[in-house]
Structures are given as C-alpha cells and as structure tokens.
Length: 371
Image 1 (cartoon, rainbow, N blue to C red):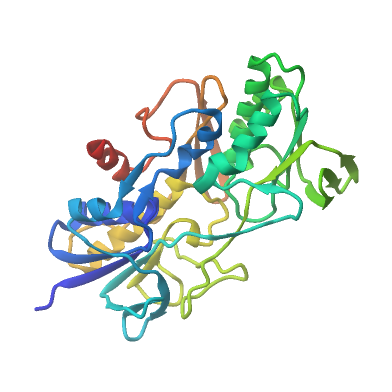
Image 2 (image 1 turned 90 degrees about the vertical axis):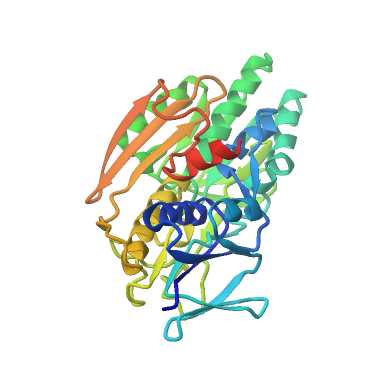
C-alpha cells in the first residue's frame, strides 16, 4: 500500500510545530513534505529587542529542521489547493499530492497608514533603531505607537513603548512623551483584564499614555488625530504595527479579510477532515505564535488519526502564554480562553524555560537541542 502523505505548507513556528507533533504521534510511518519558500526558521518573537542592542532572533535552516524531522523540504510557495484531487499547487508550477494537508502559511501584512514607519520584525533594526537613536541623541522627544484595528500582533507595540521609555529614562534624556493608540478597550486586552491591569500599571509608571477604544488618523507627517475625541498630537515619530490580512488561497474558504475559517479541531470549514490550518492564516482574532503552535498540535492530532494512529483528538482550548519585554524585568502572561471568557495570570517569576518567548510544546525543546 502507498504510504500516507502529509503536506505542510509554511516555514514558521506553526508549520514546524505541526511537523514535530506529527512525528511524535506517528513516528516514521508517514511521508511528510514541508512546502516553504523561506530558507530559515526565524524565532521572530524576540526580534523586538534588536533595536535596543539586545539578543537578536535566532535562525535555523529549514533544510536542517526538515532533515532532523525526517521530512522533505521543498523551497516553493503554495498558490492554490485542489481539494477534490487532493493536491497542493505551487507558484513555481509544482504539484504535491496529499492524504492530509496542514496550511500554516501565515498572514499577509499591509501598511495601515500613510506618513508612518511600519514596524517589521523581519527588519527590526531597519524600522526602529533609527527611532531609538534619535531619542538617545535628543532629536526626538515624543513618540506615537499605533495598533491598527482588526487582527494584529498585540505584544510588540507595548514592548516597544516600555523599552523605549526605559531607554530614555536610563540615559537621563528627560521626559519622553509616548502615546499608544489602540481600538482595544484596555491595554493588551487579548490577555484578559488581569493582564491588562498589570500592563496598564507598567505603562503608567513609565509615563506612557494609552488611548483605548480609539482609532488613529495620520493626515500628514508628524500629525496624528486620535478619534473619536478628535485629539490632535504632534509626535516627533509615528510607528505602527502592520495591518494583517489572510493568505487568500484559491479554493480555500476565507472570510472577508482572507483568513481561513476553522472548526474546533482546526479543520478548514467546508473542506472535510483532510485539510487543517494553523497560525496567523486562521481566522482567530488573536495573532500569537504560541496560539499558532497549539492550533498546529490540534491539527496534527487529527492528521495522525487519519493516518491510523490511536490518538484522542481534543478540541482546541486556547491558552496564550507570552513574555512581555519591558526594558527591565519581563512580565510573564498567561490567558486561558473559554467560551469568550479570558482568565489571566501574571507573574514576575519565569514559569517556563528562559529561552522560550512563547510556549510551543514541540518546538521549544527541539530548538534547544539544535542550539
């Protein structure tokens, strides 16, 4: 009989987590193809530190990752899926048949406003080190950080605010005016009220003003209007997180923003049990690497069951675990999400390994072994 074939599309945290979980559940009884155009897995969550001359994001070659996990790495980009023919087709013209497919291709990003610098964690130094240097050299005395409406990466905007304020204070630069504009009802609302309260206290102590339930308008350079109150600000620099959009894969269901709708077992709605998705490509409002890893684990369990493994496929029960960099001691945040309710835990004590900015059960130990 032909061996069971799995195709995993993507080369980020969710994709590799799914690959590793599959190997743990089924061993070498299946063939796995990792379809990813990037040559490296980059540990993006720590990139926010780079403009402050702190440790940069580690990089791991996908060729080595795939070899260690006994998978074939194909450096191509997914273009469309043929669900009836059970094949994934690439931009480069390749076709890869599958018995199960895991879509972990990430989200697309776009510039949310004109006249702003957009923070890009793939080029953190290029997009933010100049801001830090201008503050250190006394050229900039005020900064606005914008979190656009819709799905977004929430942690970095608060980390940039706290680390920038700490840097200015440590260099005796005088008071630095820092404003955050967010549509959320409270800071870092995705992590629940307990975490929001703790983060709000840190921001207040650092002199950072947060405009919640607000949206930003940037009519021209160094001009910011905070709506709906119409408050006008003139910050020396304006930095925004990118607006996120779904991948919009042909023949794969998507919501209005291109994100892939999933059921509670992370299977793509409308495509049956053979197609799952995980990570930022999915239509989960919160975008976070640890959550993407949990989705990949859930999807991998379903795939293992299809391949004949005796596994119990539990529905996704999201738990956000993340480290908030502050410029001083980090804050460890946990949020358990169930039926729309979020239960927060906040700690100054490290509850998981020091080298894990996010918690991914398979990826963390695997990368530690590579290190």
